[in-house]
Length: 401
Image (cartoon, rainbow, N blue to C red; front, side, top):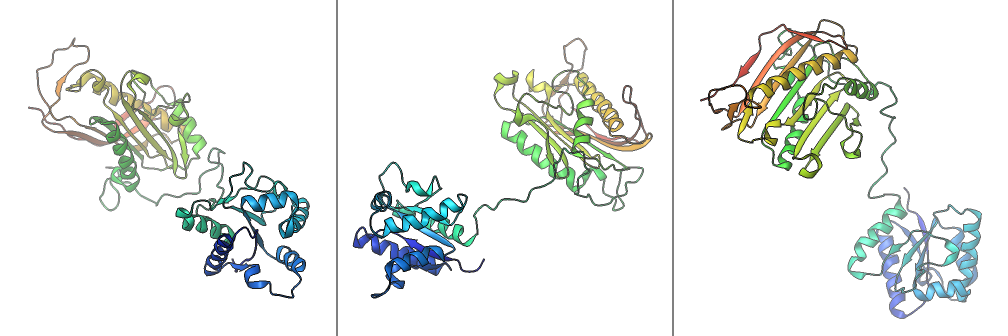
């Protein structure tokens, strides 16, 4: 923006106030604002009324220094301030939405900080000299059209059903789940960034044990957030605890939210009264079909020193059934290969046993902190009864002593 021409309207309350207005005008000019002030631009012999009229009419903006005296003179129509009120009122009436007039408040104990004829315009407060620099910056940003927090551009409705414009890098996944570079597809940057978010959420609640899931279709999809949301909601399998890919509508902060690359949901419950326990669930589904989930271990609600083998079997089975339903609802072709990684962490020192205590398990403690298994499966994707078969040997690590 070019240097805006700004007229300063004020009342000559005291010599100290005149000096303050002079400093304000000087600081504005130093910041690139072409400030006009009677102390500079009105000379003996000049028509005072014409100066005021031309100053207001021909300026881009007008600063009204609203001291208590200024407001009273304006309301009572006294002196030069009273005349300027007539000019300002005429312009405000002609264009009520005009932003030409900028009130600044100084030495004003009145309930109404600004004259009535300028309406309920937002003012900048210069009452406290200790924050003069901050107030001056706010004023300069307004006059120069450089807001501290510019309004972001309006994006497209993410739930409109249109396919998002954000694109993932093209990739080719081999039969074993590896990219051309040899790196597993499930170790890509999208999965690692989601993991970082979930790890932070778990740490915030002080939860150390969790299950992590990663799914990646070898033939990627391209879906809108609306399609993703609908598919997740239709794919829930309820066994116990929160299901895989939980969608909640009762609390706004728990609802799935749209992002340019897909949708995400975080259910972080710190207050045990809300669910009987602290719990954490985080999942993300990308428009290409990649899925990530991390949730704390159900066992922590029973005994933090235990790991239930039968609960883990149920959870992993539930995850695979969820995958079958999810990709069926997303329209993935039958026989589509799917890379799957199941990770359990926070295991070291836990005793392996069974939920319910009805199955005998030899007492053993986990020596490793993490158990990870990755494989490639092929799914016959039917909405009601998905079946999954393994097409590559799983890689797992689990050690007990």
